[in-house]
Image 1 (cartoon, rainbow over the protein chains, first blue to last red):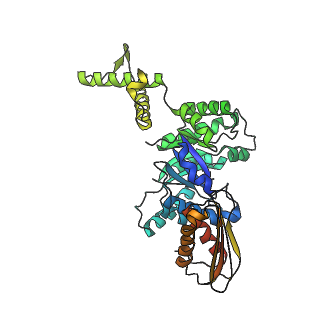
Image 2: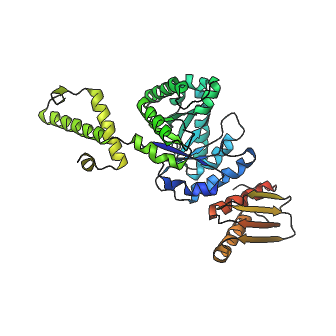
Image 3: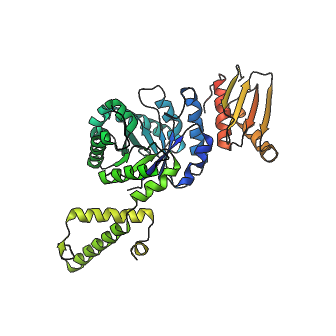
Length: 296
Length: 90
């Protein structure tokens, strides 16, 4: 399990943004070769991102590169440039079928082999941006062992549905839920779409809370100012941690007694509750939170 | 290899550089930088390294630097050369 609460988009042809992107604390940075790069600057962005990956210190931030979609002539050249340069994740936009992922997997494997990179080291994350992609979400999510996350691209998806993307997001409710279900069934992360009004902090918080309630693991970010708001929502509350510790203690007590039944406050603790508590404690560990301090 | 046509890469934004290359008899490099005094020699070294690595034997190179880091200078010079019609990816 790895934290992916925030995925910060960074335009791939902007040196100032690339070299500062690691200071904002995003869990993953997404160096973008797609929408933020003009068509006549694709070649320049590829080199800039390649050399940045090879020479800048991104600390322990997970590094993803969003390549161009597979219906363009750019995606394979993007891969050839960034896979040997030390990228952690290739983010494929506009994924529509499992065949897309299989082709991408094969291309990455070939580049890894030609560059003496351990096979399977580079992982894949995709975004679903069409109704067809959503229908195929589970097949896409399970099409390669490299898959680590599946995201929804809200603007493109709503355009494909022929509806407007609204602040309330009712039009995306079903798609978000289906995406999370597909991700869970495949055992990978689900990442929510960007919240595009960078001045609306309250709206961002509400949408992030809704995404968390639906089961998302994180959210894409277009402005570093959005990162603390999202991190706060995805950080377990004092009450959640307290509860998880009490459940964990109850498990230990039951084990010490050799009992298969776990009880807390006179009630039996079911397996799903144990699973939820384990996840909270794992998050506490990944976030480096001191459990004792949090509950005192 | 020779630079056979004029090409540019990069921008004049902060942390970037604008690289212009054009045909020339022999090699000539002009550098203009906001940090010339401190990093002028380093920038010249990078330009010469990229030119050498791409086996360029003639051409004029003008670098207008706005505080670009090494990786950015390398990327902009390289792509300017490629855009000028030299294709020698290593």
